[in-house]
Image (cartoon, rainbow, N blue to C red):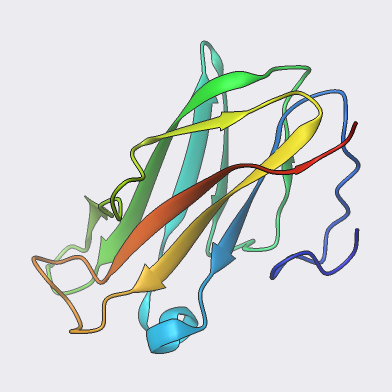
Length: 133
C-alpha cells in the first residue's frame, strides 16, 4: 500500500510485525514537534523511526507480540538541548502489540496549549492497524 497515513514506503504484510509513525495534522504538529524519535523494541531487537526519516516503515525479523516503545522529543529550550519523553494519551501506554501478519502505528500530536514541561506533544498507539488474513 503506497501512501499509507503519511508514509511513502511500501507495507507488505506477513513475515514480521511492521510499524510506522503518523504525525497528526492537528495543532500544526509537523511544524511544532521537532527532533522526535520513536524506538520499538522486543528482547534484543530494536529499531527507530525519527524526524530525519519520518516515512520509514520498520519490519521486524518475524517477531510479533508486545513491543516496548520509547517516544522522545528534543527540548530546545535548554542548552544543550535535551531529550524528553513524550507522554501517552490515555488509554495508550509505552507498549504496542502487533502480530507477524499486521502493521501497527504510533501517532504523535502537538499539544493544543503549546509546550508543557518541555514537552510539546502526546502520542497514541493503534495495535494491529492493518492485517493480512
